Length: 198
Image 1 (spheres, one colour):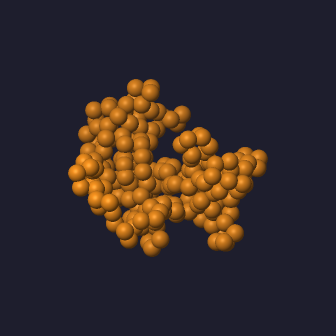
Image 2: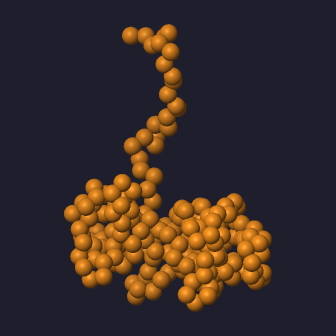
Image 3: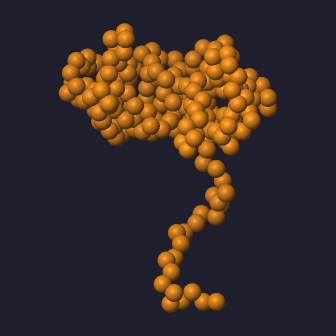
């Protein structure tokens, strides 16, 4: 049967070599075998979006951050939707100050306008930070946070499972939980920007 004259839209061109493949990339480990956080290096984006949080403090969206200078199996991993902000922590610091110090920026901003100017200097820079893992089902809200809460992977001794399926168990605060979602994928999130290098 001919489709001529039916007014149908033509489909997008398909890359048949990629059909059926997954774009999921497992995150690197957040901790070494002793439980110490691993410091990674990542290149910041060349565009940093200024936003405002719910408490009316400036935040900066750093999306994406691409891991680099870490070695095979880690370099190229992309961390999405990272943010730092000016909301003060209980110790008086803030995430943006740690980022600026880790990036080697000499400025010591005290106002939002000064932070905005200083943040323009970190675009594209490679900075040190630690990561943590999170898996979240957007539809159900089921979430697992914290690298140590992911179960050990029996197929990869000493490593954690990056893909959890319904029925898998994990532990939070000493309480065993069972995955209810069909599948949960672990993703890396920036934990803290570091002020020291490797």
